[in-house]
Length: 277
Image 1: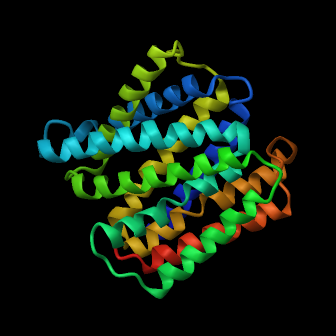
Image 2 (image 1 turned 60 degrees about the horizontal axis):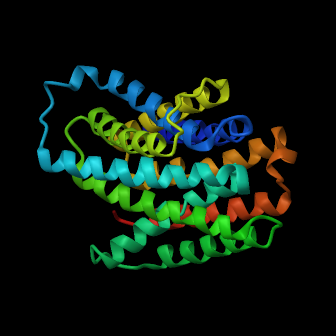
């Protein structure tokens, strides 16, 4: 029961995160804002992991995997997702990022030799159908396809985190997040965007992202993957429904958008249920 609550609450925080970013990006540069969000997230996470620093066993090989995961997830994956939000909307960008479950399953089957089963196959079909419905809307379809690639990066990063997890989940998360901030900082400095923004929506989005991440790690710690992963992956539906109620015109959300989001997430739930990784 505890793990179920943690996973659902994580999904709520991540869902709200998308709405806050959508509003904040109306006034701020996406790249500087992304760097700000990841910086604050890494700072908060290191504070949460403070008691584990110095007493938790640190394995260099695992740290390297976590640093690589941070580069792939918090630099590549998050930058692609956040860049897509002002163009296709947070509901569509977050639904696209939920393909991390699909790509994790594919990588598990292809790389780790795990078995394809009926649940994974059915979920894959539903996800593809949901994503296709999005492409029939009046949106920038090319940008939507680009946003789907973030799911590949998030899925790959999940495999690396799984292999590189330290004894302290907080310290593991802090290392990955800080790694992402370093790469984002270098990128923003090279492109003249090295500015920490003070927009309240961007700052609140950093807090909701971090809260969601911490709750998700707690869910992983106290509950089976088959509970934690599907429930935490409900965030696109939450983003879509809040957007439909609060910022429908800004997001360009209609009933087709809601339906596509539900179908996509249902597909991810089926894949999660069938994926042993």
